[in-house]
Image 1: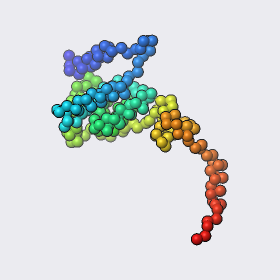
Image 2: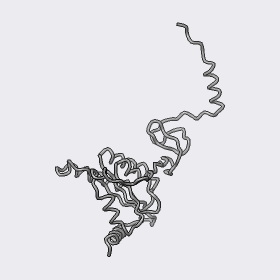
Image 3: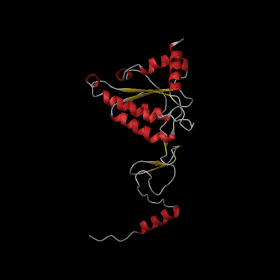
Image 4: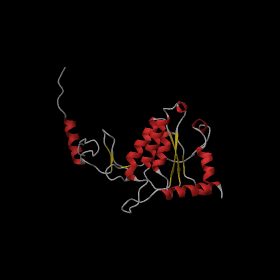
Length: 213
């Protein structure tokens, strides 16, 4: 058996060992945020040892399932935590569509994102893309011309959006205009109609007399 086939077989066996359904029989969603948080906790603990003080930690994430919009906030928090801790996140996505979460994770932490076209050559992809350390990667050309999908998910319905409303206090994103931020409780000023804007503009143009010096 080829090394790549053996690796895929091991990944399938590992997936079968863990339950993929809840107690009620419903399918369990992939916990990407939990996996990243657990890896960061392990790296933080390992960084306290003498041998790890001068090392540059990395996380390699394999994923097949599509992104879960409900995990957007927790995944981004884990990504920012890795960024502050100087931890690179490498991502190997083997699903049908590209993963926006993993693309952003690799881009923001200085890691590498790759979606192998041929799963039969998985070992070659791993050796060429992820085996090099962070110092060597500066001399390699990786992901040339690959655009990163920075699409966010709204905090109200957990759905990806192209255009939304952002809270000026906590930067929470909403897909529709709301009177109060569901995250920090900030009250927003109502949007003015064209007539109201025209009336306010006329009032401002009339103004009031300035006091003479």
